[in-house]
Image (cartoon, rainbow, N blue to C red; front, side, top):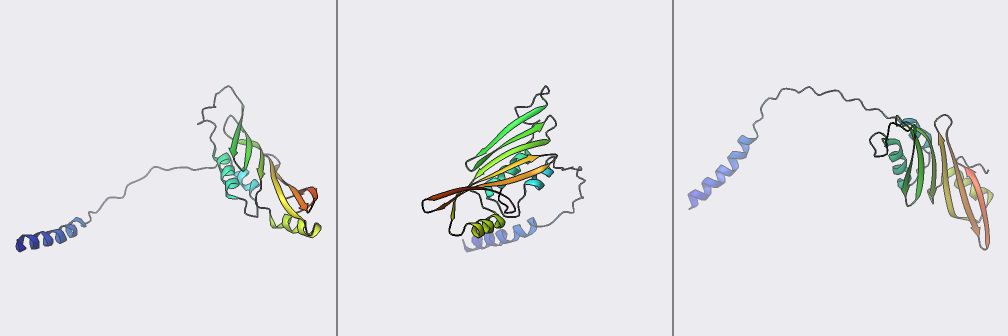
Length: 172
């Protein structure tokens, strides 16, 4: 019995060693793949210096990656497609041409991270006030780029002020 167990143990140790013998394989030629971003300008224009919240970035990436031709909405008859993208934090209405190129977007997000320039400008002009609500608006047009605005609701006790600001901290 001991000899059988010892034989099985030796066999169990030796067989994996032979299994590791490597055969020389020929390198295989792969076909060329071309990757291009149709809507890369959109992502470059809506990118902010301050890290926006993760859901906003994810939704903007979905808008840039959306393929109109692969969607169920595509028909050869139409020249313009308007697609809505929703998340709990906000929404994006995007317009695409028949080739899938992003023409314009209108975006609205609630309670996102404010850029440092906006935070500093609010603290400087309204000391003692707290931001209780903010809305981030983006208007992207292919020819003009993106314009970004923040609508802020400030409170100080019973007093409430609503202000509009640009991304660089200027009051509008």
